[in-house]
Image (cartoon, rainbow, N blue to C red; front, top):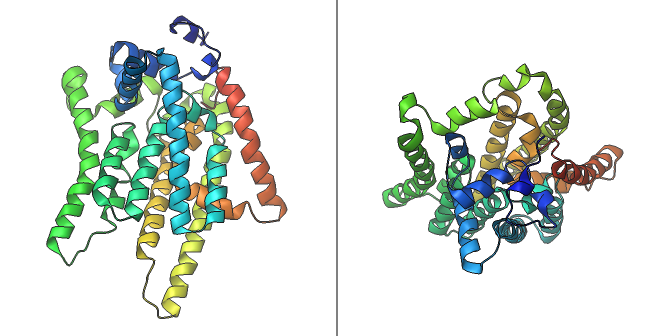
Length: 347
């Protein structure tokens, strides 16, 4: 019997169906702090903000968590719109925001999870990068690193404005890039000193994932219970592969066209942003196939705006397959919400 969330709440609330799966960990951490080593897989910034919101506004923890998630969901969508409008156009920005808000895992963005806060920091960092405000971009990326374990993997974005011909610019860019990595390592060092020193030289996050969540190279496929999760997750891994293929072709054609015309690459920043986002998505696809729970894939990559940029182009095609895929994309969001509330995968 999975559903014990009602025993944890201060009082029954009408949106208790949003407090499922990992939301219970965030609830407990916000209420009682980190009480066991398996809790250290969940990074501290979100539960800290939930607890602070509870104290400031005298709200139940469940209300604080859900309210914060939805507020950051809204601001994430605003950041996505403004970034996309700056890099592409208003039409793409509107459709990208629609796909983001009604994605297959959008229920997670309204629940007591870190996805909304994480996307807020990642998209906020991109927003300030596009506007050449590197310090603010780095601060937002540090926020992402304090929210989720993969928050530092987009740190190379902070190098896109570096001027290699000027040593001070190159050094400052490297420092800004290193900051989110330092946040991640600082959290890991803290947990190692508090909980994991007795295990020797281990990375706490990886240790917990392997011991408590069956993660590791091909570990996911060793258990018959995960067969339904593979069935659920595989279509979304395939969707990410489609995005990688379509985006890769588009970027290659644009680069060839620029070179053939003998023009200076005026869109270097845009090209570098797309390349880094593409590389991160490719890396996450490999992790989803070989290391982590495949049913979590779309949650895992949902912060990446490249997905919505590419799908906004692909879904506008008037042929049967893209239109069918668009219908499935939206329909799964409803199914995911129902399954999540009933304690079923793909959460």
